Image (cartoon, rainbow, N blue to C red; front, side, top):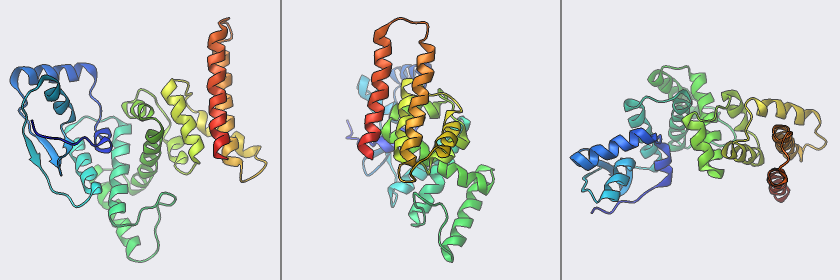
Length: 274
């Protein structure tokens, strides 16, 4: 069987199939074989992860097609365009793809930075405007939406670094987070993103909480240097109170101690970052 390299970044760009869809694909491949070739770049799989998984499991032969790209960013753009052209995507998946597409083009040209989506004057300004306009036409949205999507996609990717499961829940729509909150979080400290990732993963996330919490923490800030950590502390404390209210009628001390331990662990994580 052909040697294939699995790349997590490329694999995580592909929307996960639900259980029924995956089962139907598996039954079809087992009965009829793998009729569509897998696509690779330098022996790295860039399309056909589900087919590869099924073929490997059942020892079914498959063929591959090799494509040539100059960089990983070009591969990511190809994956995005390929997925958008053939799948029914959720709004948040489309937002993530549009934003990632924009960021990859900017990275190729060396004009994208984490802290600022704007670039210096001159040729880069013209290229940025051209990129936004071209993508806005391609995806039939405004240039402003493309810029916003870039921030949102970056937030989602940063959440995924802490918790791939949290990223999966957000992109699948299992957890709904206000896009404005995701956009604002792109400029927030890592501690806040990690808290949010933990809450999404363990199911304790409460919709509309981030925006309200940021306002509270900003109003009581004592020291600008510790303000980001204050915001994170307020967030997890609010989550603790929400959880305790849910357990108010329960007498199980084990559950209470588990909730409290999780709160303490999150505080210790912030402490280590100060």
